[in-house]
Image 1 (cartoon, rainbow, N blue to C red):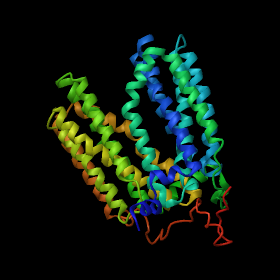
Image 2 (image 1 turned 60 degrees about the vertical axis):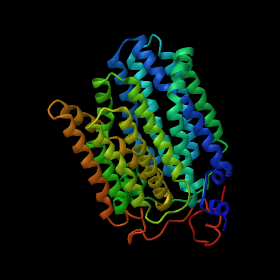
Image 3 (image 1 turned 135 degrees about the horizontal axis):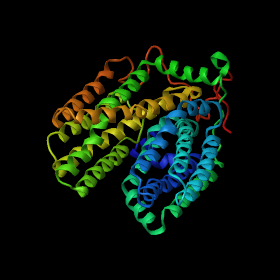
Image 4 (image 1 turned 180 degrees about the horizontal axis):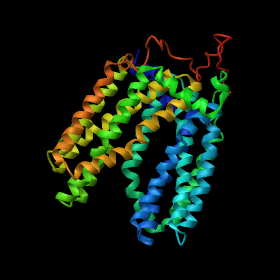
Length: 439
């Protein structure tokens, strides 16, 4: 078998982009993500410069996160109940209206009005993200999940490197209001692209407890707990966000800007981190890997080392050198973890598991940021960073002792992959198979 044949068999960017439904979804996300680069700069320009309110800016940013945290578990239930492309298109239309409203509110309106609109935008994201992350198995065969997630990650990281610079310049030239209107237009374009996507229909079994909203959310939690490999990684994410990850993102600017006033150096380190994430996404593109859980967790270790190095030096070259593999490892973990969930979790539960993953990996972050702030007033900097590094590495390696984590699945309780919704043979091979034929 040639290298080209291998790529076709295991999945690559070229093969997934040949699937018109996935390509359409990818282009829609590229469009809306490009517009989203304008959002934080437009908000900052309005609230910080025009209204001169640092507190108001913080409240607006917090409102977005609060909206997501309040609604994400409900968003997972909705993603498992209804066609996911329709959810995404509906949310894009809603966000277009909200961002358009924000464009009208940035001049002259009270900050609380803008905060309310942004909170609703965050709530929309809470419905959109689980639907998108659980949609891919309905568009592509499961052996192509790494390629699809790698392409998505690489696209996001590329825009993360180039987007802020371009967005800042555009906002400066055309103003906050016009930039927000541009963002609204990208949501409309994204919705139009999504309306042309037809996902594979999947029949759902009746839910325990009569299918109430609360019962379905609890069923998602039970589904995660019944799979030790999923539960262990979710708990690891909570621990990371409460103890270690905020150390890097809080103390990096504190170390560089306080000791050297080097804003350029801070930008270089963060650019290296994003570039590393792009490289990590490029490296994990093809095929199903034995021991993918081991690889994913070991890839996180460089981030722990970077936290430790932060306490020992303020050298921009050394910190950038540490940030490069740290970013690569985080992206590698993300691609392998998301792909494993998409392959191993039954379709009717996937939206809820994805929403629970988001909640565990982000909702505990404010606690971590608060703890780092309290520690700074009482504990030496080097002690905080070395403790954070040690806790991160130990808590990353600990899940490898849990059944199924090294393979990200295939335990006795979860012995085989569920049916593949995007496999055209899935419904034909067995008349009793609950997966329907392609739409």
